[in-house]
Amino acid sequence: MIVVVKIGGALIAENFDNVVNDITNIHQNHSDKYKLVIVHGGGPQINELLRQMNKEPKYFKTPSGFRTRYTDQEAIDVAIMTLGGKNNKRLVEALQKRDINAFGFTGIDGGIIEAKRKEKILVMINDKRIMKHGEYSGKVKSVHTELLQYLLEMNYLPVIGSLGKSEKGEIVNLDGDRAASYIANALGAEILISLTDVEGIYKDFEDKNSLIQNIKRYQLEHLMEQLAGGMKKKAYAALEALDMKIQTVIISSGLGDNPIYNALEKETGTVISNE
Image (cartoon, rainbow, N blue to C red; front, side):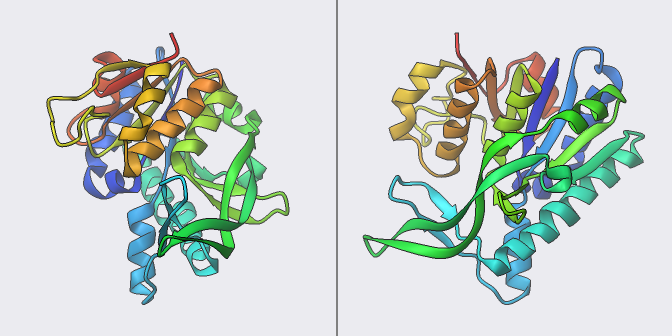
């Protein structure tokens, strides 16, 4: 079965070797059961590089309560350097060192991910709705799978940075979780795994004993109002994935040993299903 795994930039920074070792183990020893496709982000690395350039990353709250990056011209240039450059190639390099034939690219390459550019975004500033122009983020519209299918058939491991191609051919920054959802749907993946820096979804984030191990789609919908920050965005992406053809989404910790294999075999984290 095809499994799409989303790896955030925080995990690339914090647990790089363990994640890469886990990918290697699955690709070398369990490829008869699982074919992996890796989608990665790079938020912390984008912020770090912006600050090295004496530019402060810009974030805003949307009217619906999501925290969003304002991707202006400077930010998209840095996103290209990070998602198409350092993060992508460091992952590919680490896998190649372990004799995994990783093939790294972003969604702009070959026009694999087509997106609609958000040229402006509505944000909240001092309790007022303000329209910010000059935005270079996008919403995925379609994913072309011919190259991805070929790579999988030839036993390459696709490693995809979350950039896309706008309707005008521009590079746009994509939400990594939502990009992974669309890629998984287009490939007919049965499972989407979103690795994060917490164990999964909690009924009460302050109570570490309140981890939700299994939840149905309709139950997650009712829980959405209680979620905040990055987890709310991940849960929203999970709902989007389940609205498509994906049967199971797992939100799980990418910290520690064997995070992907444990999510697949031991159902660690929060398992969200349509059934």
